[in-house]
Amino acid sequence: MEQILQRLTSLGVEAERALQGAADRAVLEQVRVRYLGRKGTLAAILRGMADLDPVERPAVGKVANEVKRRLEAALAARREAIEATVRQAALAAERVDVTLPGRPVPMGRLHPSTQILRRICQIWADMGFQVYRSRDVETEEMNFELLNIPAHHPARDMWDTFYTTTEGVLLRTHTSPGQIRAMREYCPEPIRVILPGMCYRYEQITARSEIQFHQVEGLAVGRHVTMTALKGTLVDFAHRMFGADRKVRFRASHFPFTEPSAEMDVECIICEGRGCVVCKQSGWLEILGCGMVHPEVLHNGGYDPAAFSGFAFGMGPERITMLKHGIEDIRYFWANDLRFLEQF
Ligand code: FA5
Image (cartoon, rainbow, N blue to C red):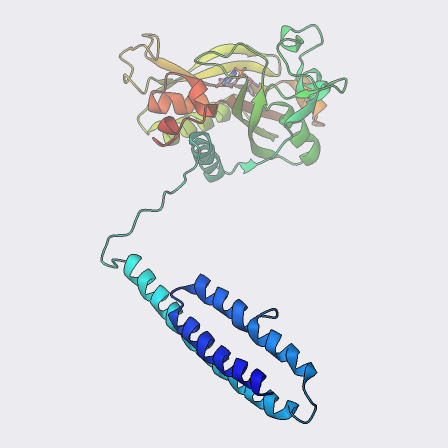
């Protein structure tokens, strides 16, 4: 018994000294494991109690508990002291100067195509046109046949168009098939809608042509829709888009799904009509195709062409953005080059 009490006492002294000498968390943990751990010195001494006379055990147990309590208190005190030192050092090292100006948070922005699409939609909304969403994946029938583009038409060439692996299903080459879908949904009600969306054409990528681009289609159908209404509405659009004193003109053109058909030009934005490289010295820039909805197309949409008439137009927002900002290459739009995108 004497011997075990002796060992407990010297353990207490030795361990307390070691705890106080521990300079950091790691050393403290080593000391804890060595003296107080499950396989540590104290545990070993306590295991030795099994060999004692049962009468002697309570006295030894009391001393052992005493030593354990003392060491645990010393451990906690030392841990607290080390943590305080660590905190103090961190505070000194990571001092924040609250008087420094804040770092600016980099802000994202809308893609230039999205910006112009929203502006276009807003102008048409002000004129009473609702947005009609139509699908990107279309049938040959909607994209071509019902718009008077028969099977032998060059636009239907395999190489002009992205076909899917399903026979007769393709990526729309223009937003015009949405005209048929809108008419079939609203017939016999009058219609005033615009159809913004992505179009796809298998063509040579050049400074002016991409294989993927937006269009905004417009469609008005009613009992007294006239060519005058078409011209007046489009002139109003051009004035809201490009400025009230911007000159516009209409040129006769051809589309299979409108009759008569026209193209609208605005006075060149870059040179104010004097002639420059962008307008190829003509002073004019083409911004859209338009016309009176062909009677056959009205019929395909469910309307009686004897009682109803309509006008339609289609414009390319990327080309309009190019005109507005003097951008000379359409490929910038999808190249994801921040130097380009950050300018808008
Ligand atoms: C059409 O697609 C007709 N559906 C437009 C239309 C609608 C006419 C309703 C009459 C009535 P066009 O192929 O010209 O027409 O294209 C219309 C506009 O889309 C062009 O003026 C141009 O701005 C844009 N566009 C056409 N092809 C490309 C291309 N490869 N890359 C970028 N923009 C294009």
